[in-house]
Length: 343
Figure (cartoon, rainbow, N blue to C red):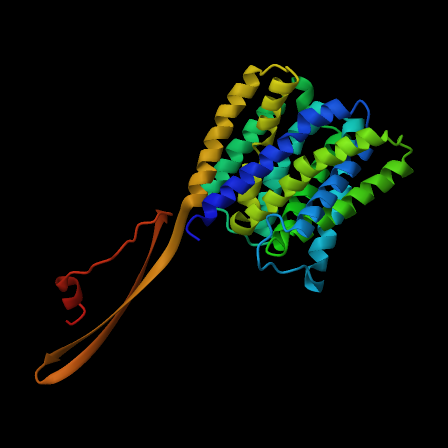
């Protein structure tokens, strides 16, 4: 248990890295696969891949509770929001600019945190707020492509709507994160994937060749399936707000992979944003490892005064913060401190 938070941090960072693989690889596939079919097959690959992991018992704990009827509202919300959000984003991009969409898309981090705080009563410390502000700022710097990025239009409202949907979806997923991770990802992947495929057919997009379908589904298993899987495992411990903050490093990893695989240049904006993002991530790590709790101490002692025996019970509590470690801590009280309670 003492390494639980540290393990959750690695899960959250792993989720970001897995998703970042999607950026350069999707660019290579988009020449042969239309956007909505791409989304559909990515999700479908995620659902089928993690479903196979479930059958084979890979990364499966001995005891994990299955989804039940009480989880149905959050499960349906998760699926519907995962279908609606990409549609809103595509509308926003079609009537606006891609740079504007990239900038406003970063609102998902703040939306996730605000919804977690206001609707789901998840505690958010001042340190975590500072981390989220820095990470959001760094993401906006990374996305900035000139004055056109600051232009607000009708398309911007759709992009903001998509960000809010994903923020709410993150919190719906958090509400069922204690249940079977395999089952959640399988249901999410298959249902959201089929929903996107239906939309692709209805809008008349051309079905890609089978080899590109298979490549997209393999990519979906890695960049969506494993990413969602580790994201949910992180949410079990960290909650929606903190996991979202760690997950925000994905654009930076994606840009670096694009530099390595596609020979795209790393701009001055990237390096500036990277420094700010690292500062925000350090704050998030410190906030995660820092533990605050209240200790209550009960002292009972007996003494004799004027031939009469008296028993005294002293109860006092104090709150303190420390970082997780293997060391034990103790508290001592002087005789003078105890004697003052006798007077």
